[in-house]
Image 1 (cartoon, rainbow, N blue to C red):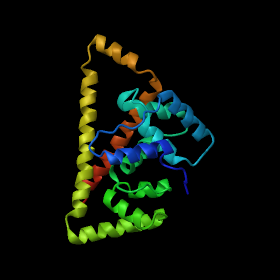
Image 2: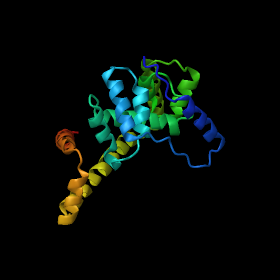
Image 3: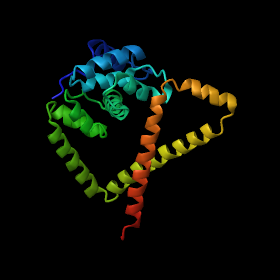
Image 4: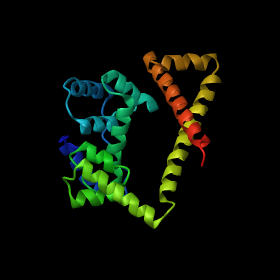
Length: 225
């Protein structure tokens, strides 16, 4: 079980102060990108089970490269995928910003419960030491109750997921159009911005993932009702 704390004592004190001032905008402490790389390398090299700390780093690292910051961070650290950092940042953000309860010590439990803020708070407050298996069971039971109360619940959840996919796809299409419309000066600026050409390989991975997903969805649509 991952027993690394989610928050340092400094972060905890800041969070307590923030709770006293709920209407004020709050910004997380920012971690310098190079410092984040150095600590991330130490964690990965030591093979530590420190998912919470990596999640905190992913959440607080300075956005030096905009939307590509986590991709750059994963490449610089080595031994960890950008999508893993994305997932860990998502879990950290949910518990820090949306779930009204102290996070569990186990990152696996936190990840299992993170999509369901109110349910997560109920479960953790009732049993802070809940296991990931127990958490998964509680989530499944909750979904079944929701489905019984509202026959459209499962459909609405799936529709939201697919709509989110279409939104992300539209952004990719828009980005492709933008890049293809650059003039000579803008192309040189973009080239200068690509400080790590190896990151372009991830675009190919994305292309393969989109193609595989399209084929799976096409087969699904073509299946007999």
